[in-house]
Length: 213
Image (cartoon, rainbow, N blue to C red):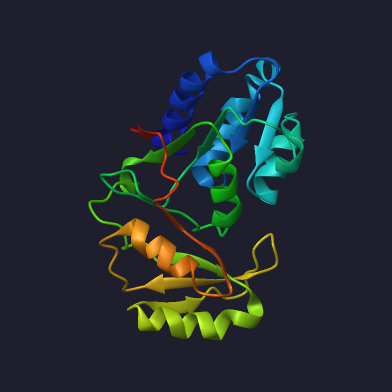
């Protein structure tokens, strides 16, 4: 059991509780830290309406905990979105997608009134890029996208035996300099065949909660 991840989750619950009521929808991300958050969220499921999930894995966890899960298309407002990250820099830019759910995570985060990121101290970095940058690609475009990424200085590796919830593949980009996260996020997303990449610079969290042991 990770005390730091649990503590971040408990702090996130305390932060969102005053913001929600019986009509509220909460956005929920994906990953090991979020799994702790879902456990804590289940304890207060009587004070909000339900959740929108960023992955099939989180949907299953929430439904088994008795939290009603709604489709994004069926809700008008998400009060707050809570998710983890693989890296967080000093300006709150993120790398996400270690679990391969970053495209849906970015959609739900963008659709929410507020984005709260929960991490442990190990995820804090000065500059992003030590963690390989995930890029979700349509299967038929994979080799073309990989060649284009090499042109901008990255070393793409196919994530083997993995498909996203949307049925796409992931290229993990190593050795890429991320001096301007916003610029790089946009540049990669303009390559035809890319669904989205794991840089969250255009869609940064409003608040970062760092759990400590």
